[in-house]
Length: 288
Picture 1 (cartoon, rainbow, N blue to C red):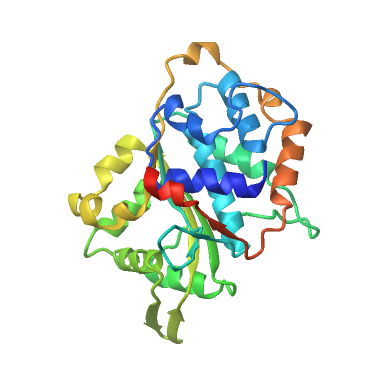
Picture 2: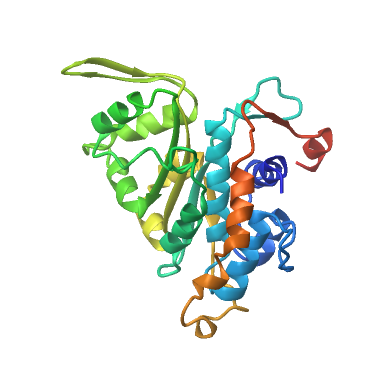
């Protein structure tokens, strides 16, 4: 599957603000969800194999995968253009991936991370380059050191960090303002003992992973109504009643990851999409 088609599918989910809660909600994003062919695209293979070999809510691997696609587009400086709008937009998606506790959120993301191919230097072609900062100073210093102003941030158990950010008088509270400004494409700056740090034009893809209950207990009403949380696309993944846990006491990873899936990932992430611009057709505006 071409990166163009994958990008279109993901943008549909982001722009139309889908909040997948079961298999039916995410099926429109998958080309061939129920047929296991070697010629399938990487996402269809991934979806089918997680569906047949695990009880993991399918929104978890799907949106983890799409976040890597988003970062791939962002680092390649690919953009999108929405009908009736003159400006091009970076593909810097911010996804809050929520699922019940114990639903293998972290292992699912690791499987996808391990499938990302290596470049000629032996490094992953796409990998997170932002780690959880200890506070606002650490955050702005970390961003300032990324010279190409493109970031990929995956945070597991994100509720712990959000709890600190939500405390208006806490040491991490300034990070809330930084994140709000970064989402809007505004500059952030801070005066430190070594001088003034200014970060401008920085864009990032975020995938924040947590349990539904932890995040719900952490966020304030203001954040959910008009604050930081509103800047995220929320993907809520719940259990599929047709795939009970008793049928999957042990996950057979050999049936999920094999040479065929690895080849599909290699083909996908080896495409040259540098400075591509993706445009929605006019009909999509009517659907919206």
